Length: 185
Ligand SMILES: *[C@@H]1O[C@H](CO)[C@@H](O)[C@H](O)[C@H]1NC(C)=O
Ligand SMILES: *[C@@H]1O[C@H](CO)[C@@H](O)[C@H](O)[C@H]1NC(C)=O
Ligand SMILES: *[C@@H]1O[C@H](CO)[C@@H](O)[C@H](O)[C@H]1NC(C)=O
Ligand SMILES: *[C@@H]1O[C@H](CO)[C@@H](O)[C@H](O)[C@H]1NC(C)=O
Ligand SMILES: *[C@@H]1O[C@H](CO)[C@@H](O)[C@H](O)[C@H]1NC(C)=O
Image (tube, rainbow, N blue to C red; front, side):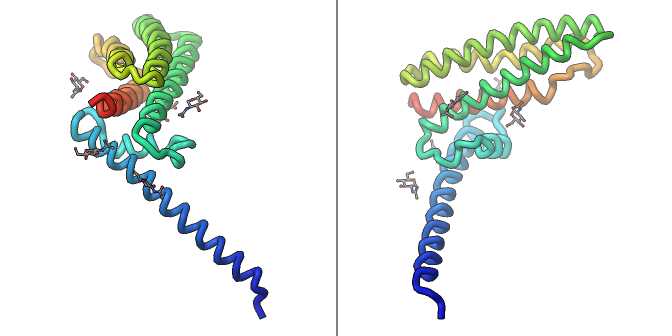
């Protein structure tokens, strides 16, 4: 004999599982749809990169709207560039650092520091639905990794220790920018 409480428990468990599957599908649907739109309108955004970075965010499973997703993508950009700034500081502390590389890193540190301040402005503007201002902020944030990487390109050999990080920061801000533009339409 199976106790009836066990049966009800199993039923409740099943219902909960189906609910969470439905909710997850819904959420990933929003992320996929948004990333499809972003990568279509901006060739610099890779669909795969967009989906995997937005889904990796711990709170992304409770996202219900594009507006929430936009804030998450700006937040993600902030975390990413804050970490890269700390990484640059760490690189600058190394001994025997090449003077050319050191000059580039000094420039990058300044660019990233400014970008962190600007992404803070972007969050304020976004929360107040000042999308035009948030667009200007994020456009300026997006320039930082590009300008940083360009510094290293002044010499032909491949010396940038920030290549991947700059690329990530560029794409993350491009995604945020594209969501801001979707919302302001
Ligand atoms: C799925 O999303 C739509 C709107 O995009 C919403 O109306 C619906 O309640 C959501 N369903 C679940 C299970 O979250
Ligand atoms: C994506 O684009 C389609 C068509 O352009 C539009 O119907 C849909 O609402 C957009 N989705 C988001 C999340 O902006
Ligand atoms: C893509 O990025 C390049 C520089 O990396 C830029 O010149 C170009 O305007 C960007 N395209 C779009 C659609 O944003
Ligand atoms: C920055 O974002 C990229 C893409 O989501 C990720 O692969 C990378 O680990 C992130 N870096 C940090 C330090 O958060
Ligand atoms: C943004 O990040 C902050 C911490 O840096 C966190 O407290 C907040 O919940 C995040 N917001 C969203 C929408 O992810």
